[in-house]
Image (cartoon, rainbow, N blue to C red; front, side, top):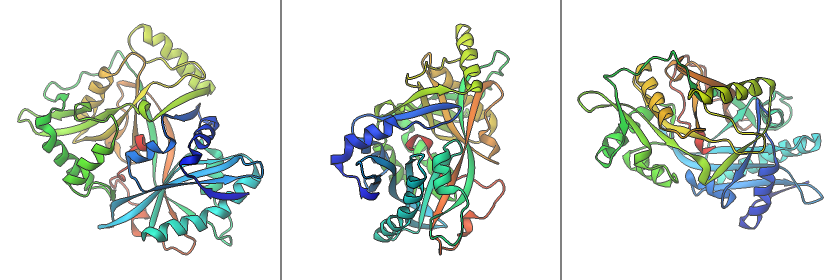
Length: 370
């Protein structure tokens, strides 16, 4: 097997492999990129690289991409990397070969950019990726070490229950307008500056990051305000359909029960239907989701849910021990566990920000960009 760096000439080959790789879970899914495979990375940065592990038959056995951005970590602005789209075939040879090849290219790409830290996300249902990257192994082998930064849940909001509470009338939630732009950017900067890892370095960086984000416009944001017009919370509602689609390929018994229940509830206007097998999932991400208290959080989710189309459900990230973002009781929800990891070299010391800190703010992580 050989490791190669993907180029524009590999676009279709990588796109086809990506689409044909099914990720197991309560719902087995696959991703189909729209347009160029690499357009999804450009939502974050122009500095990215994709590596492919090719077998003797010129077939892709494994792949991963590294995206590099400026971020504030440990009070210092530095270049950090994200390892994403980790795909490894089930063969033992592919898992072993990929593990051996991954560290040299990781070190090479980090050295080019004076990058100290690489982060990654691995869902617990991705067994192949979990075994290849995260699973404990002999410390004698020089392999990248995955250190857990924070556990999280991918929360999906599928329905509103009939006994749900009404949002507090004192909390006004409405679409953002041009006159709200500066106040919204200032609020996002204030909230993200509390995070141990953040990409929002200034008001200008927030503007640039949102300009990159295809089809996420000012009018896609909901703002929660008090009677004095102060922002108390916000979220952006974004559909990924212009850069990638997610297809269902099978339902576990639990997920099938949920699917059938939502089908019945949809006739009562209380649930969003899940699609048949081989059809795309219809959903929107809640991005830049911030609130000052649980009542405001509920009001934002309630209004966002009411604004979606008939079969669109909502998806957002809840980090463990961050109680504010727990799914409210009024919603019918499901969740999938995952881990946010820092990838360190074998000889690299563990930084302080990886040490356990109960109730600490979660990292600045937008699931929609993964």
